[in-house]
Amino acid sequence: MKYYIRRVQKAQHIILKVSLYFEIACAVTLIIALLIAFLNVPANLYSLYLDNGFELNDFIKKSFELVIGTELLKMFCRHDLDSVVEVLLFAIARQIVIEHLPIMESLIGIIAVAILFAIRRFLFVSHLDDLDHAEQKLVKDDYIHQKIAEAIAQYRKQAAATTLQEKAEQGVYTADPTEMGPE
Image (tube, rainbow, N blue to C red; front, side, top):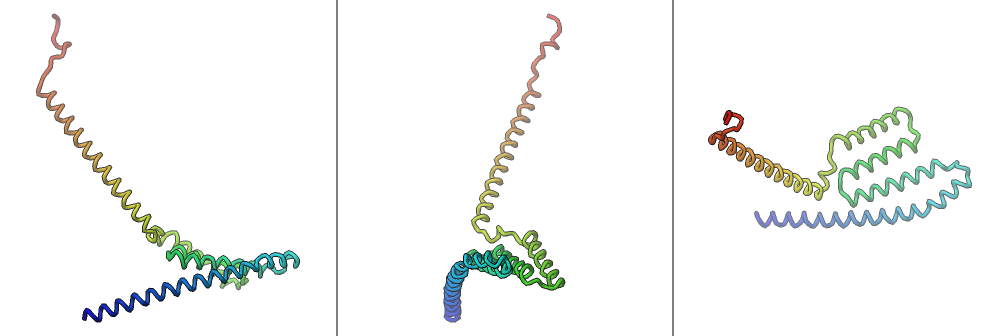
């Protein structure tokens, strides 16, 4: 049974390595494609100038594709929920702005963007992805707990000293010169 479990774990490890290398290959391919697409931007800009802006829709479409590709590349690198939401936001925004959809499809796209913003705002905490931030928060919380414990201990000492001093004052009666009367 142990032999079988070890073989399965080894196979899972190999599959994980292959998938990581494949992801790196996809990212490198995407970088090359983005560089090639970006090389055409000055020519597209110049043709936009010569055509008096009639190709503006195509230029915006290509620009959105570059932005979405860049966000996709970030998603390959960062592996967090923020990246996924950003890629989806740009893709939906591109679809709404560029494609000139019918009103119902535009409304569905706007609702999708609103849902993504709500998810980003209310349903997930981006700090869960950031292990360094989580560790810093734990250290900060430990520091705060330690300072609170020290303050409570100091307060208890002061309270105990005050009660001891009050008890001592109550036990020893010293005469007040005003109570002594005329000499």
